[in-house]
Image 1 (cartoon, helix red, strand yellow):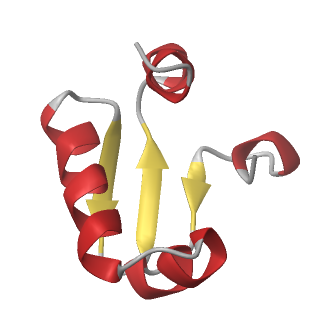
Image 2 (image 1 turned 90 degrees about the vertical axis):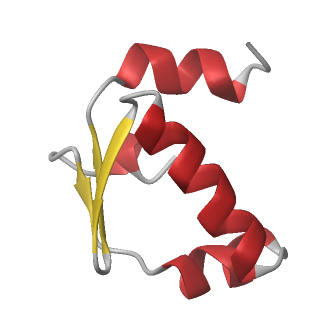
Length: 64
């Protein structure tokens, strides 16, 4: 949803802030982001998430 409201594929969010927004544990957010990174869906740096494959991210959001 953040990507839909920005003009860039880069999102400035920490794992901690994402966890608070989602109401989940930081460890779970980190695990999910690492999974997406291994699949080539995102790239991560400290406090920055870059969407590398929007289509694959949308499929993952739909449970694929």
